[in-house]
Amino acid sequence: MGCPCGDTVGTVESRPHVAGTGNLFFGPAMRIILPIKQVPETTGVRMDEATGTMIREGVEAIVNPLDLYAIEAALALREACGGEVLAISMGPPAAAKALREAIAMGVDSAVLLSDKAFAGSDTWATSYVLAAAIRRLEPYDLIVCGERATDGDTGQVGPGIAGFLNLPVLTYVSRVDGIAGGVCRARRLVENGYETLEMQLPGVVTVLKEAADPRLPTLRGKQRAKKVEIPVWGAAELGIAADEVGLGGSPTRVIRIFRPSLARKCETAVASDEAAVDAAADRLLEMLRSKGLV
Ligand SMILES: Cc1cc2nc3c(=O)[nH]c(=O)nc-3n(C[C@H](O)[C@H](O)[C@H](O)COP(=O)(O)OP(=O)(O)OC[C@H]3O[C@@H](n4cnc5c(N)ncnc54)[C@H](O)[C@@H]3O)c2cc1C
Image (cartoon, rainbow, N blue to C red; front, side, top):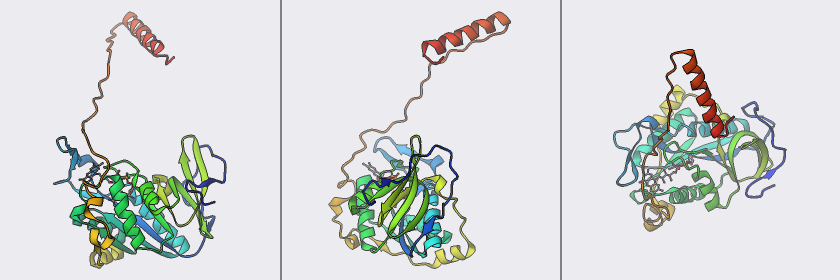
């Protein structure tokens, strides 16, 4: 137990399995940190090919859809174990809206990480800022992230936070089976099925869609979300020098951005009589054979 990648305690199981929480065992009250990201509504994303960045102006911003599953997983764990869920988001001031939505769903409190110095941060710098904030929020038992953000789409930030905090991480978690005695047992998706792992807490999990069925915000939650104060922490509060983060502190660079061309070589057969249908079928078979598909 407790190795950074988790130890396999069961065999890899074949699909499918029944989604949901196994409710095997749940231990004492936990303090759960929930990093969530605000993203542009996917259908509205346009890229600035000159700068390699997303054009966010005029596009509706929403909670990263995959983070709704992380929110639900964190709330379900709080309900099973007791304790509290604290959401954090790094983004512009408008990202407070995403945090208010999480509060409307039942999250206890939230902190916004916002500073001009954070703009242009890559996944390394984003994870660094989030990790610095989480350090400031100590003590905590579990950090629950989404699988990936629908805009940046790297899935690197959860493991990045774990790296900076020197914590174990379980990625692609499809079900948290239980938490007790400072250990989290969870099922994670692997190429040929699922594996059950145990991880020493504190630790990080990144959860898949199948880990939870997100609840809707309640009226009482919405009212609370409107009123609740969300502290804003910038680089100074986190003890971060401006040149450690943002574009200047990011080790990766977007060199070029382009839409991949999906050119397909097509051949059309127009078969209006039986002989032509036979010929077309022969041609199709020949093509499939030439590609080793039959
Ligand atoms: C060189 C470079 C420049 C960039 N410049 C900009 C820029 O100017 N503006 C910009 O908006 N983006 C910019 N990005 C993208 C930015 O780095 C990523 O959006 C960000 O690091 C998160 O990565 P991701 O979207 O792949 O998240 P993923 O790793 O896919 O997200 C996984 C999970 O991590 C958590 N998470 C991720 N991001 C956050 C967050 N911000 N707050 C809280 N939780 C989070 C969520 O739980 C999420 O489900 C840049 C990237 C690069 C490489």
